[in-house]
Image 1: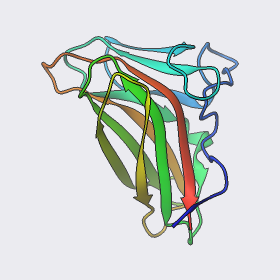
Image 2 (image 1 turned 90 degrees about the horizontal axis):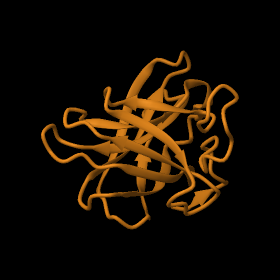
Image 3 (image 1 turned 30 degrees about the vertical axis):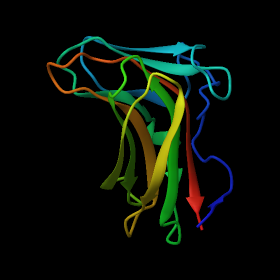
Image 4 (image 1 turned 180 degrees about the vertical axis):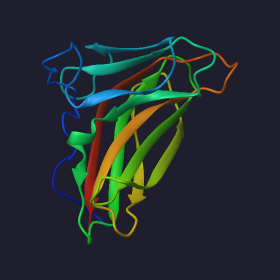
Length: 169
C-alpha cells in the first residue's frame, strides 16, 4: 500500500488564522474542562510556522485536544477504505497517552464509527501515525488529536505541530 495525493486535512499546519479568533481556522477544542486552554503557538514546530498547545491543567479532564470543524470534514468515496493518519506531537511529560482519531459520517453527516490510534508520548517532537479504515457507507471523515490523562494523574500539556491524512492505494 502507498499513500497517494497530498494531505487532505484543511489547515493541517495551523498557519491560517480564523477571522473571528486568534486560533487556526478549521479547528476547535474537543472535550476538556474549565482547566483546559488552547494556544496557537510558534513553539515546537516541525512543519509550517505554528503549533497548537493544549494546556490540560486539570486533574479531572480525561481526554482533551482539537478536532476539525464539521464544515472542514474530508470527503470520502466508496473506494477510499484505507487511510494514513499522522501528526507531529510532543508532551511535557513522557509516557502520556496520545490519541489520533477519525470520526466517520454518512452522506447525511450522521456518525457511523470512529478509529483510534494510541501512543505513549515523548518530550521530543516526533511523528505518530498509522493506518485506519473507513466503514461501509462513509462519506465524510473528520480528524481529532489530543492527550488522554487518567483522572487523578499528573496532567500533561500537548503540542501538535501538524496533522495529515492521506488516502492509501
